[in-house]
Structure formats: structure tokens, C-alpha cells
Image (cartoon, rainbow, N blue to C red; front, side, top):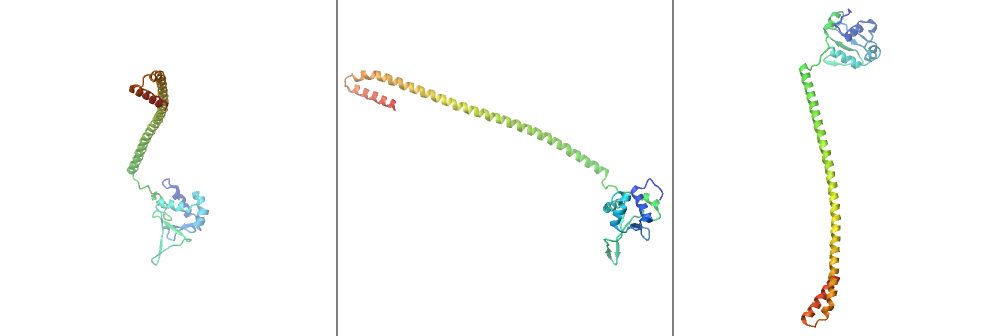
Length: 226
């Protein structure tokens, strides 16, 4: 095979591998030269792939063939699809023909079906999503800050209310003591005043008016004691 820079390395290695008579027990041309056969997949993967492709994964090798347009040949025997799991596996490509290595440069690797415009739109969509996500993040941080401020103000308000309640209770207690003191003082003054007037009232004549006055004084004193 002549060296051609237009032929991918995978195809060059594959061509050399199929052409090499030393590997015919693993991989070889079909009888008509229009395809090639892998005679024993397990041995091929274990003994040949590492030498040429630096791996021993048969599935990866087949996937690479598919990327270059190779197709697996399915044989039909009396109308029935013939499948031999342990038998030879055959692959075919219209430009991979025995003795015609000049056709290899026509084999092209499949490109992604995604159009450039579609990729551009997709990238723009991603950029838009990221931009919107950033805006949402900023809004979320603003909301979190407001909630923190409200929580802090609310806690301060509750502390202030608690302090006012305590002061109110203390003031109520002071007022109650003052009222009790005044009532006690007034009662004592009345009692002293009544005691001073009582002898004079008792020395008066037993007139109806004097009797009524004595009765009123007595009731007043008793009420104060109660």
C-alpha cells in the first residue's frame, strides 16, 4: 500500500492488517475480495487489536468500523438469517476492496448529523439559560438578605416588647403600692380624727340627733377596721 496522507490511520492499519498473510488465521479477505472476515473475535481482540490499535475491545473496533461506513454482512440461508456467534464475522465497504488501495481515500468518517446552525442555536440556548440562572441567583441572594434583615428586626421588636411588658408590670406594682400606702394613710387619719371627736359626742344630751351621730361614728370606725 502506498502512503497517502488523505487516508486515516485507522484505515491504513486495517488495510495492512487484512493484507498481512501472517494474520490470516485471525482476519483475512473474503473469497471475492469485496469484504473481509474476522475469523475468531475473541482471539482477534486478545492477540491482534493490542498490537495495531492499542486496545483489546472488539466492540470499540466494530464501532470504529461503523463510523467509517463499514457494514456487517448478514448471510441468508434458505430465507433464514444465519447467525453464528462463534463463527466468522464479515464486514464490507464499497471502497475497501482487495487490490484497490487507491479507493481508500474515498472512505470518509461519518460526521455528526447536527447542523452548525443547530449547534449555534443550542449554544445560544445554553448561554441564555446560564444568564437566567445567574439572574435568579442574584434575586435569591437579595431575598435571603431581606429575610435576614426582617428576621433581625423582628427579633429586636420582640425584645423591645418584652422589655416594655416587664416595665409595665413593674410600674403596676409601684402604683399598687402607692395606692395601698395612700389608702392606709387616709384610714389612719380618719381613725385619729374620729377618736378625737368621739368624747365630745358622747357627752352631749341624749337627743335623737346625738344618738344618730354616735351610731354613724361607730359604724364608720367598724368599717375602717374591716
